[in-house]
Image (cartoon, rainbow, N blue to C red; front, side, top):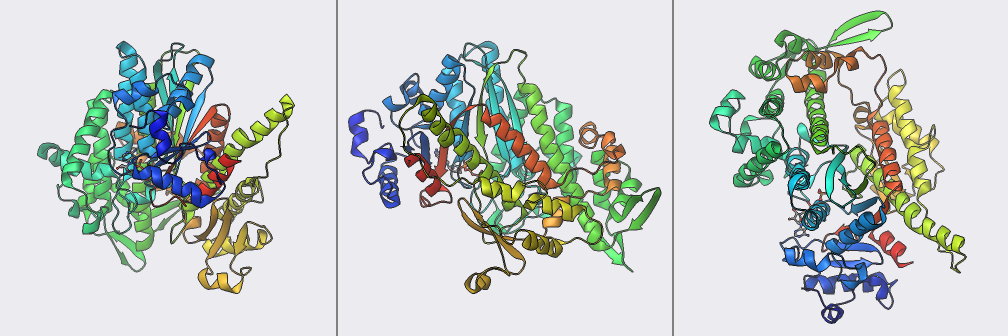
Length: 604
Ligand SMILES: Nc1ncnc2c1ncn2[C@@H]1O[C@H](COP(=O)(O)OP(=O)(O)OP(=O)(O)O)[C@@H](O)[C@H]1O
């Protein structure tokens, strides 16, 4: 255990700023490596905690460790997630400052595990009786629910969060947790209908099939065998031990009980999950350009489970009603469009169900105390992503990381320099790259990428991915951080497709493929399907598709505009809080995107 200063000094340095040659990246990496070899996964860079994923349970989160870190000054103890949490907690309790702990890092680096350790620490150091204990139990149990519905096996992480999460814990004046509130961001709903090779759909589908009793499965008209469902990946590489799905099922059921989901609510939730599996099995054929459903059995099952009208659903899956001024016209769909409509419905139901679950968790976590209490926020959100092929989702995620970097600059460097100035302290101006220019490139009104995307999505005529790319290339040709294929040098053109554009992000360049941008941004769910769902007698489905939505003539915001608005809302929540930073990295990835920038900042 890394306790006494003596022991600690033996293995590298605990704070990289103490390194001689600290600006040398190799020296930094070497220090992390040395420590990691000795199971010292935590190291500071100034106030930022670096956490290197050990990929195995270490005996460093025991009650003994909690006691070790409680009520100690940050620098009196060795680097640890508990030390960061304790510092934030004491500042909240003693100085009444709202806090936020921002956890970043790429997929699989350990963000969610870190957020759980923070919760564990808070749960351990606060009161263990009565209402407080109940609140803590609910806060802790929200994780298995969110993970079952929002996590999936990917090729990078067997339990990857496919959504962004911000959780506020509310404390009373004695420093005990009395409530919580969760905000969810951009669930990767495309996973509901298809998955990459080696990956899986969201855990809950498999957990339900593996863990539910035979009787209940019969009620849901489901077979235990996952290969009965088109929406579940069947490639053997993607499988996970069935026992772990059964275990997951038991955990999620227990959590739903603790969080006070009624048995009626639980029944309805699983009817919805089952209906999505059946929905994927609805097939279509095409005759003279018109689609026809070729198997009514899954349609009947969906209708039974969702308590909606079978004729209405059949019609809605194969036709589209369009209202243009005063005219209403019904046009039949071809097979491709019918498949699109079916999948759009499955994604919409799942996505809305997920948000409903979060709201439902919140209503159970809400404190009865109406006073303005202090809160500690924990942000566990997707890190910067650079894949072989980057698309709409990566643009959203990387935009989110640009915004967080802006916040980092605002909250640390800028404010520190302003403080020095105010206090008349002599200081040397630090040169740093302000990534506002990239945020503007993406979000500036009328000019940025989001504005151009929305303009293209909403214009009459035949907007498509190619016309969008042409528009972006035209309008952004001279921007320092935007590179189009025609403007690229010959070398770059060789590796960049004509349907791609490149953004020079603060953490490095990313090439995006424009395919599906328009479709994903429009995120269209045909009105007939919305109406069918709205008329459902399943009480949750009814809530997911409120009738007011059908009556409204206003076009909903595009997907990226909704995301931009929710991010800006998040930024204003975070701006008012005192931040702490945890940067998670994978052991062989000390050069993960953005780490050099974090380093540079913390070193300065
Ligand atoms: N501190 C830790 N101790 C032991 N194992 C860990 C720790 N942190 C992470 N792991 C292991 O790494 C796996 C991935 O971690 P985690 O799910 O927290 O990553 P993540 O950064 O949240 O990824 P994603 O963005 O894909 O959700 C965990 O399931 C766990 O096995």
